[in-house]
Length: 280
Ligand SMILES: [Zn+2]
Image 1 (cartoon, helix red, strand yellow):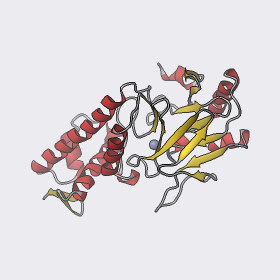
Image 2 (tube, rainbow, N blue to C red):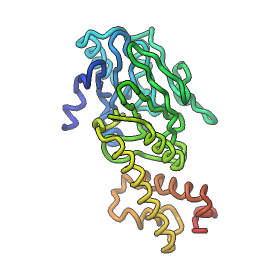
Image 3 (tube, rainbow, N blue to C red):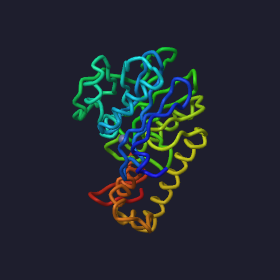
Image 4 (tube, rainbow, N blue to C red):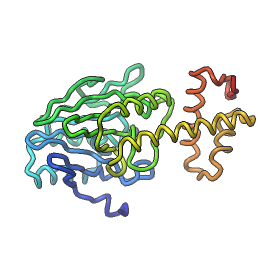
């Protein structure tokens, strides 16, 4: 679908009681924009909110009306990045009864300024006819949650897994070890479909999760090979591995390679001296 039409897309019913409301925020970082999901009929909850575009609010209101849904009861945030929390203030103005839920950021300043109720691993959100299980899944962000709906075997994955491509892992987000651990946990779940915050629905979850893990393992092997061949700095490793990288993606590639090096350092396989890394 081309981005111009995508931006103005209306909500769609994915299955009974589950609606995709596009975030109306296409950009190079978000692709076609953030997917937000309305779950439930009599007192629906919204998972993520987009970036704050007024046309998003209109699309959400049109969805509530078109499918004769009850008043919005709660907003569940997967994490605090701007393309997920950006419409919270706007939504609170229009739905003053709504409660916003999020995992608090610990150990660093909370960027999300709106009042919210804290969530943590193991919490359950009771809706009309469903119960969502809260899973703490750091790696992309330190405050990242996935929401699992066991009755329907659905997972709302936020930015842990995307419908297309891979996701950005950085030391600030919790690091690669934490990310891989989060993915391994998903392999233990019985999941039929994954609803990501970016890209299309994932209908072969196990395959996708395994492909994500394999991708990081492949990258780690490349980093180890570059170190063996004498590369010592992040930028020299990036140049060896990504031979055809567009300059706009260079910073992201550097963050990714640094995440790999920090994981190897944690595991005692690499030592760091200033900007240089060496195999043990
Ligand atoms: Zn994010």
